[in-house]
Image (cartoon, rainbow, N blue to C red; front, side):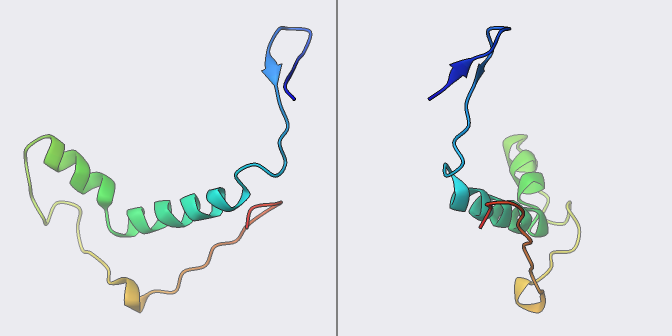
Length: 74
């Protein structure tokens, strides 16, 4: 249950909350970087599509991906 400290800031500690989701999010963000999704998203929203803008796209079947977790991140 959240508690308020002496400065009136609410704090909470939920050690089991969102454990697996953090790992999935880290993997999704890594793949997003490999495929340049943020660059493509920005260019489409600015109505200027240039498929060569972010540079060379790497094929994921040629890559090795490792995700090292700390603490309770699985």
